[in-house]
Length: 188
Image (cartoon, rainbow, N blue to C red; front, side, top):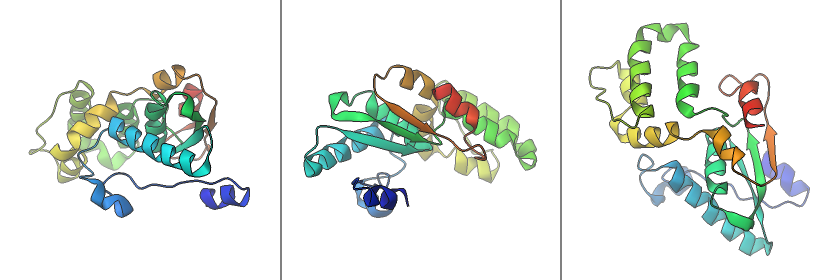
């Protein structure tokens, strides 16, 4: 809907699926990615869009986790990036966000000691053995995702945005259950 609204105003956009998923299924293993890889993809797509539109710079729009991808991409984009639009983007490291999401559901109470231990280990760059965990946690912290989670948990969006000299529009609703107004305030 956002792309259609932009098009109605004469603004072209490119929407992409993450590497290895949906229309990008042939682009590799979706579990063998990092935010650096996603950011490289975003910069490549922005370069293609710039060429097709014959413009000097492009904007990156990132929603939720995509906001973190946009911040990582912007750190290395140079003058080819006009600015960013961050929609419901986390303002805290993803480990904090995940911990809060898990803690918010009372049904998770028996799982929290293992979940917190896993998040702590991954935040410190250590892989974990999840074989004794509840099946839901084995999926969440599966060995194939751990490198991605280590990378995600190591990135602080507020620190990333502080290092940018670009215009940034931060869009946040006050009823979002995963990313809250405090995240937008931290980014601002």
